[in-house]
Amino acid sequence: MLLAERRTRYRQVLAGDVCIHPASVFDAMSARMAESLGFEVGMFAGSIASATVLGAPDLVVLTLTEFAEQIRRITRGSDLPLMVDADHGYGNALNVMRTVEELEAAGVAALTIEDTALPTPFGGDGEGLVSLDEMLGKLRGAVAARRDPTLVVLGRTSALRRGGIDEARRRVAAYQETGVDGIFLAGARTRQEVEAMRQATKLPLLLGGATPELADRAFLAATGVRIALQGHHPFYAAARAVYETLKYLRDGGAPAGLKDRVASEELLAIALKQPDYQRWQSDYLRARG
Image (cartoon, rainbow, N blue to C red; front, side, top):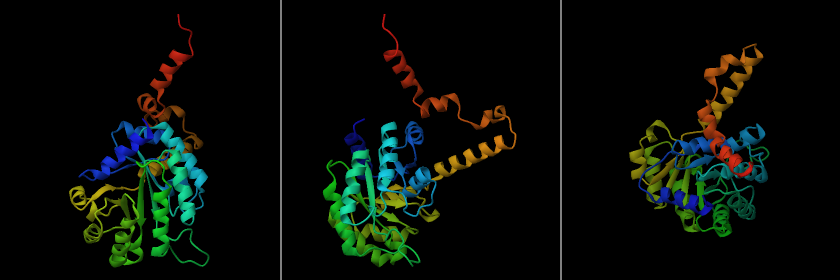
């Protein structure tokens, strides 16, 4: 599928009237499995990128190059429209423009740029927010940097947790004037917060995780939320499965005892595109009579 088609499909989700949950993916296999299950969108988070590529916590030690390389592996391996968390854009507004260029070339359907002050500065006691003026420059630069008009650029704010509803409302209203395609709300916990953000903008809203109070997709859809994350459990489940399998073998367990705990041939056929490769072998590695 052409990248523009994937981006158009993502835009259709934003333009729709329902709220979907994306699949949290981290490599080509997980994206293929999500696609096979009918997920409309895949999500590759910065925290999961750091864990997958570096085996490191989410402290913004991953580089843009490393991030883009893993994204290329995912988008090359699946047609699932992929949205990614591009953190603070890896620097100032000019760095943000470079980030958009690289991630667009890597095949993303959508990317978020956030207003959190990253990485944590020396002596810092937590994540603050960049100034409103700095963030507006970043978002304007991000919109200007895209070459494919179907690429979705999202402004992400942590103001609900760092500044309260009034500050979040002020920022959301300002961000929508930069030309971004939607607003990603990090840390929303209550219906009151989501309703306040709906009053501040008519752009589509996205939620970065949901509390039990925000689990009602009918309510979310009615208040303009089009995508609501559910966390990144697939990666954590995979990490546990690898550890437990290695421990079982290290403790003397027989491989035959893993029969019911490993991927079936049918699942591997999906994850590894085995039918396609078998067909290609037959078509191109054998002489025709």
